[in-house]
Length: 245
Ligand code: MN
Image 1 (cartoon, rainbow, N blue to C red):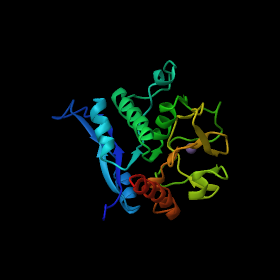
Image 2 (tube, rainbow, N blue to C red; image 1 turned 90 degrees about the horizontal axis):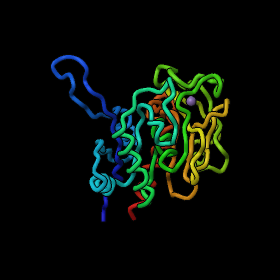
Image 3 (cartoon, protein in one colour; image 1 turned 30 degrees about the vertical axis):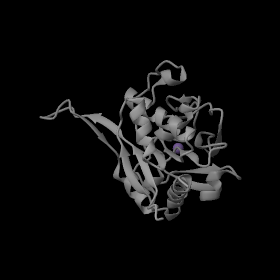
Image 4 (cartoon, helix red, strand yellow; image 1 turned 45 degrees about the horizontal axis):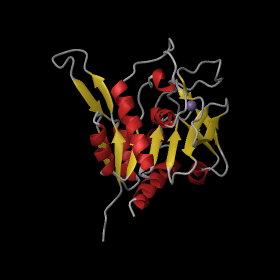
């Protein structure tokens, strides 16, 4: 029986229109680059809007074969028992709750996860880890934020030999970098799979799940300049396909 392609749920971002006739209107959206990357890797992208009902969130996950956590803004510090730092950006509590519920459910039912940028941090928080609220020169000698344009790969990362990520990308790659937060204490159950030269965690992966990988950079923006980056999406989509057998 042809069961079609793997369906990949992509979490959405949210913003509220500030000016004009639509002022106050909330919108949910994703960057088209995620949609294109999943499609190019052979998956069928499906957007998962932010909702609050736990039962409905479980149903969202039931219709997808894999979960892609997209990038976005800062996580609430209270999720890892900290008070807000001065440098903390805008938070979206309902997005945090939605994604944490999706991650926990995906792990419970063994569906693959690819977590990008903010998603990497949410994966860590979901399993009890903490994050840096704001990287500064005190923690990082590399500038990790605002290395524009999006397809500019500005710093190298070293990938752990023997990790799942190394089996996909090798042990050293150049990455783009648009994050002022980063994984701090790695959650039990996760392992660091890559670091920047300043020691900042650039990738994590689940120790036992078939595929639960978080990356701090934005591979979806590098596909044109670094064709090898598609392998990350292909490995994820293939794992999602396998997971429904
Ligand atoms: Mn970085």
